[in-house]
Length: 627
Ligand code: ADP
Ligand code: ZN
Image (cartoon, rainbow, N blue to C red; front, side):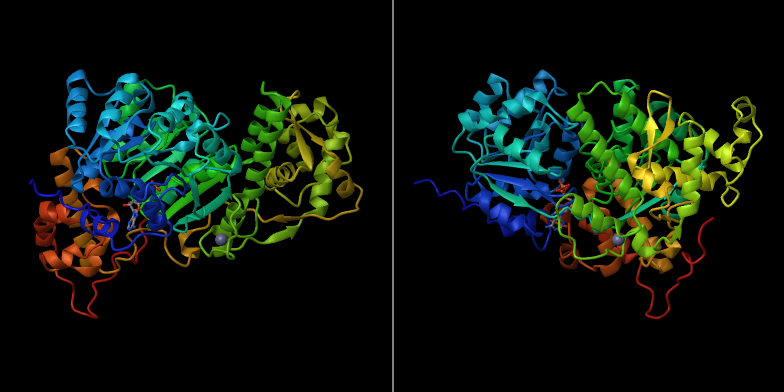
């Protein structure tokens, strides 16, 4: 009689021995147990929450290969490389493989030599692939980025709708759909389109506690502010900078380059090879800044992005949350930093007014922009507002956003606002911000004279504010719906019904004081810098040495550095200074295979950097802020 096959490992053993983690995170255990037992699941979890383990572990525990459907072809290679580092037998099947490569994967699949197979949806839907899967008895299907079934969303993929075929062809195979972005409507669409009515739904909160939200108004000079911020708080670290237009992307990237940063542009106007090259460098090299339109970033799997900066206003809180969510997937401190200005508000309002969309669509877009603007102008905790918007119930102010760390002051803007509104009225509600400010300040321009505006009662009455102050005020009036942007008239401002009580003296108005740049780190309780814990010189040196070793190992294999070990793992090595293999195995992220492959290489470096004697910390290196 042949020996019985060994019993499959249980989930805890896989978590510990393969991935090197001590404990499941909130929800992970429930989800894993449910799928291991053969149930269907819909998992809504924020970016960085740990969705991958929810299907990777059941795939390793159940018999047969786990099949992962993902639209992110560009990332599959790195995802597979990361799994192989853990000793997981993983492969991918998509259009980047040549015929021989695809055949090899198919053979491995049929031979029972794969634990996980990543497949592009269009590939999966080919009859040939479905047949192949039929012969390999999958352990499960994981449908990643499940919100791609939504026709309303920005990431709609028509092939996703056809994925219901999995249920029809493989009714006995459990399916787990995962996404980080799902409001009620999208959730409903996923359930409906993927035939997941019987699936258990797991909703984790939306909070990303390690991300610090900071927003400020820009009155020009936003590039300079960005550069200063990166130099002061994130030198040499990876970041994404979002701009609204391609031209601006090019300009900002070139400017940052000229200032000595490695900044790469990314937008739909670049050819595919350049785009792919820039994405690849971002994923593989340390300290790259990608300057991008929103075309960049969907499913960017890089765990150590320390900054997401916006130089323009995103068009909705959904977009803001998704884009900022690309920071700090590894759970270490990260920054969401944004500058926006009056021009953004006017541009977006005009785009909306002139768009071809039907009225219902326009109304939704308008509401989304309102919510985004309201969020920017808040004087209370940003995280609370963000979470509430997505239906969470936050537990109170977060202490890790600009309004918590450095509460904005408000001022009584009633008189100034009245002056501005009556200036709009007296000039006929047909002029834009620039001219209105000129009139308020009593500027002597050709335009003022041509229209006779120097004879108006509002001419020169606004000496209490400077031009930037008036622009700030007008922006807040627009944001609050007290002024409307007239699209037909190239951004002329007009009064709204809401502005009448204020004009008539029946109501008062308090506005936020202007903040010229996002709150400084010095105002913060804890630095948002992932390296900042290393007050001691010796620790800093060990950290740098570990990173160098990681870089060498990654380069020799042609994989991204984080695939060898995450920053969080290296950081724990610095803090715990393991002296032997056993101690190293206790560091989170060091599984059996990585211990065997890299343990000695890293132990050697740790041994060469002993901890300084207690009390004798070198200190000082970080004390002097870099200039
Ligand atoms: P998501 O896909 O939800 O954005 P990932 O699956 O990429 O998130 O996980 C985010 C990070 O958290 C990864 O670095 C992963 O290794 C880590 N992680 C996930 N689960 C755990 C856990 N139980 N213990 C420690 N680290 C974890
Ligand atoms: Zn807060």
